Structures are given as C-alpha cells and as structure tokens.
Figure (cartoon, rainbow, N blue to C red):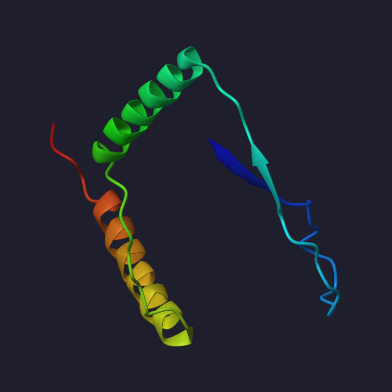
Amino acid sequence: MDIIIRKPTDINAPSTNAIVEAPQHLSFVTDATTEEHLKAASVTIEALSKNSDCGIVYFDEYGSDYVKKVGKLIHIFKKYYTSWSRLPHHS
C-alpha cells in the first residue's frame, strides 16, 4: 500500500514562485490481518456511498436579480401569513 506525504501549507500565505519539493513516496509493509481490515473497510465504504443521497446541485441564479426576486417573495409570504394568522381559527 502506498501513500504520498506533503508538507502542510498555510492557505493564507502569500503566493510565491518558490520551488516546492516533490512529494515523498512511502511504502508500507502490511500483514494479512491489516489487508483484511482494509478490504472490509473498503466494502463498508462502498456500501455506505451507494446508500447515500448525495448529489450535485447546479444553481446559477445568484446575484442581485435573484436576491430581489426572493426578497419580494418573502415579503409576499409574510403578508399572507400575517393576514392568515389574524383570521379566527376553527377547532
């Protein structure tokens, strides 16, 4: 089993044209028990991901027009709710 190790970076650091060292390749020696645990974990992760409702939602209506439209709708809903809440309710 292989893994790549990189040096931690500060995401707020200013960008530079500095030359970055290449990642180091590490090799691990594992026994049969470790391999069995890894296979079992892989099966579990696969089953969990198949049962997931995750998806990608593409939404391209952000911006001032969207905010204005939603703001108007919220204002209208508030008026309807306020009017409805003032009506006498029947049990």
